[in-house]
Length: 166
Image (cartoon, rainbow, N blue to C red; front, side, top):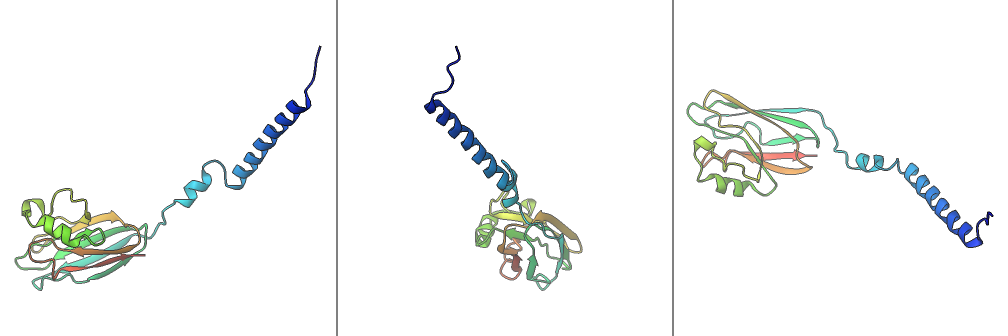
């Protein structure tokens, strides 16, 4: 004999079905189960940027103010126009230039005057000998101001500048 639903069972099942319907409407309005989250965390994509820098016997970079958009692929080309000095280009995390220079102070040209795997370094060229060129390509860090400099002993005080990411 079929007994049917009691009033309590009917209300309980109605609330469950109604709750699932509301959840479905909410997910649809938010773009599905995962679509909204991916769109909210997308990194902006800027155009590729190339900076052509040089340095010579004046022990200064040809440009000490650089700017790029967040999400850009950045290339730095360094031309050494010096007769006898070796240079590099190093980009540090904000406020970490002196930490990088201090860590590099015990290094030699064999390590490019950089502490291996220094966590404060974002990107760097190899040492560039007189008359040669060096290059590094990297993804732009988050928006902010970053110091770049040369870690060859004694040069960072004159060979430095700022990369601004907007």
